[in-house]
Length: 279
Image 1 (tube, rainbow, N blue to C red):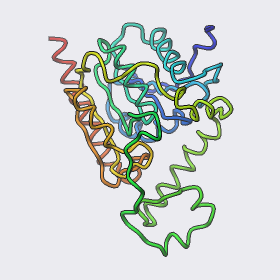
Image 2 (cartoon, rainbow, N blue to C red):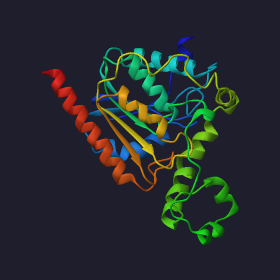
Image 3 (cartoon, helix red, strand yellow):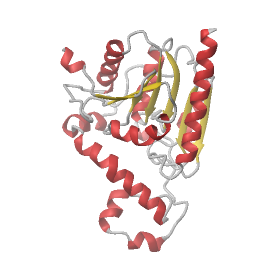
């Protein structure tokens, strides 16, 4: 791999302890910034490093063939940009799957891990999912929506005007732009192949990850569910495991206050952990 192929585009905000933030499949830095910056911008002392994965955002695909390639690009990025520095790690969806691998490799450097709706089982057919069922149903509101909006938003969990407005704003503001800018020609074949859309090594074996960990799942997540992630409790002894009711794979939608409280609690536990390490 050439030097140019190993470069990942980033958007860095703030100063202090690095937080490496990894987005989901066909997403980009804008998605993570939308949800995390309103929280981290209030917490001084952290340098947020939002990274675009290969073929997503502003990072060219440069010949990636599978998730192993993307993982190795992340490893090269960390070695060149962070070196032996200690850092925190955040990952959403597929980024959560990759973050677990990074935490496993750099366990002596990672002082905290946050997993939002993480992929635990990369094979779609093996995921433990519930069938969709709206929690708040209003057929009148749904029938009044345009065909374009219904196609855009798909299944709507909370069928109220405020929820639909927030969901549509997230789709139009970050999800669609991220998908449109991704390299579908390279990424789609990876996603369609179960062998390429998984790492070649296990994340459930080896030493336990001991630093403070937050796992946030959606009770109504149609993509990855929540039951598969229950086994993380045994792998992360210092973990807080949350399953949010009204939570989909796109959380937070309207539960932003709860999400912020969880992230703040994780940061508190991280700071406590780091203070003990310095004694």
